[in-house]
Image (cartoon, rainbow over all chains, first blue to last red; front, top):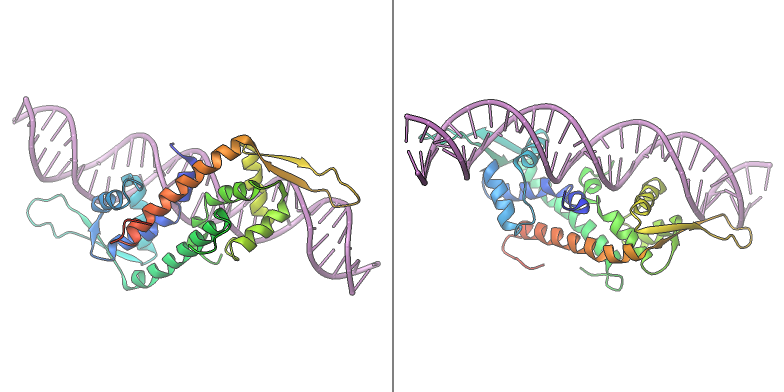
Length: 116
Length: 116
DNA sequence: TAATATACTTAGCTATACAAAGTATATGAG
DNA sequence: CTCATATACTTTGTATAGCTAAGTATATTA
């Protein structure tokens, strides 16, 4: 375990990040892990054992849906995840919550400023 | 439970915020709860049952120390918490971790920008 | 005297990031 | 052809931490 705080500080944001990455187009697990890594500049390096439970959770909450790729050729079967209408509505709400907490944190950390 | 995500997103930051509030001067529990509420503009509304475990944890890690107030007059006895040297060193590190994660999150959420 | 604010403690619940192990297929090096 | 590696998904178990709730106790004020 590199950093005890790091692990805790990531809690709650993975769902939001996955939802954000799926906003553009359906993607499969491995792809999400790669994009997460690249786009965050190595900050979010997820193991598959971390990502998939997030996906199952979001699916249970009806924020995303999945379907197996209609395997053209002899590709490894992939499960594509797609954001639902409900997910598209929910994402901005989650992001607002995140911004409010981040803002509140900054207000305490940087005492003299009250803007972000 | 108001917001499932909110609860998770606060994880890991409470320790940092308490440490930050103690950086100036020793404070007691109730005082920390009030300051947390005011400075964060109502974002961090802690119950005492949430704060004290944070304090015990920080004390176990030697990042803060506590002592009962030498009750002058007939005041309710208060336990004052003071940041240690170790705590002063650790705080900037924790803050850096937080900023890195926050930055990484923003990079994914706001795709076209790569500055904070 | 009673209600309220202050002040600290502890037990139990729930959610989630992560590690690790397991299954299985495609591809490229030798 | 074989073997290592990358791809791809699943499941189990662990540790941590925010929160609720209940309990104890003192000071202040109506």
